[in-house]
Each structure stands twice: as C-alpha cells, then as structure tokens.
Length: 224
Image: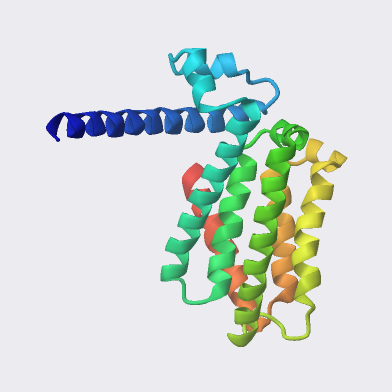
C-alpha cells in the first residue's frame, strides 16, 4: 500500500509541475503575441525565452494554434473573473458594462494590431472566438434588459441590433485605414461610448459622463 501511495504522490507532483510549466508558457506566449503579433513569434522563441526544450513545449502543445487557443481561453477566464468582482460591488448594470469596456479598451491599447490580423489564420481559434462572442452577446442582452428595468437604458431601442452593431463595427474598423491614424484603444472607446450614450436615459447619461470624467481625471493624475 505504501509504495503505491508513493507512486501516486509522484504522479501528482509530475502533473502539478507540468501544469505550472504550461501556465508559464501560456503567459509568456500571451505577452509575446500581444507585443509582436502571432506570426512573427516562433515556438523556438518561446522555448528559448523560458529556457525549456522544444520537446517539452511540443509535449504540452501540439502546435502554435493549440498554444494560441490556450492564450485566448486564459484571457476569457481572467475577464470573467474580473467581471464577477466588478458585479459584486456595482450599484447598477451600467457600471459593470463601463468597467468591462474600459478593461477591453486597455487590452486593445496594449495589443499590436497584427495580433488581430494574424489570429484570423487559425480556424480553431476563430471558432472559439465566435462561440465566446455568442455567449458574451447573450450576457449583454441580459444586462440591457436589467438596465431598462433600472431606468438606465431606454425602453424604445432594439437591443438585438445594438449588440450586433458593436461587434460588427469593431470588426470593420479593425480592417480599415482608420487604424493607421488612431490606436485600437481609442477607436474602441469611441465606438462603445457612442453606443452607451445613444441607449442611455438621462439617469444613464449622468453615470456615463461621471465615469468618463473620472477616467480622464485619473489619466491626468497618472501622466500629469
């Protein structure tokens, strides 16, 4: 019995070690992909940067697409955790949505445009993004509904169209010339707040304007 338990503990340790290594790889890849895009980052570069063998890397990830998929899953998990924390403290749904959009804008700001161009070449990743987007849109509809109940969002708006427009507009802009003149973060913020102001009641507009005022004030204090 005892030797068997020793073997089991050894297996658990190996699994734990492998999990830790995998997490380090995903975090390193996420940083590299965001800075340089996916195409220019080689699996060799990631292995060398972490001082691990290519064999170890390919034992954990079949190819770059598998690694990229885990990067996208990690980002979604982190965002969901962040949203849960925000929702637990927020007084209304608009606060939650504004925080979500702020976090997303920061992600866009810190990500090379090439990343968004490159991921389109990976079918498994694009399927995962499409599935995640559908779930996010369903969640957004629930937020819109609650916002109407709370008197924050207008009750004369077709929110099915609104939720589709935000995604479609960003997709179009990512492939347009405007990205050469403005940062992705600035474009995203503009699109989102234009929609937020368009669907908000007077009560909601005050929340949006106060949020923007605080945001600009924090940025001024940070860089001023």
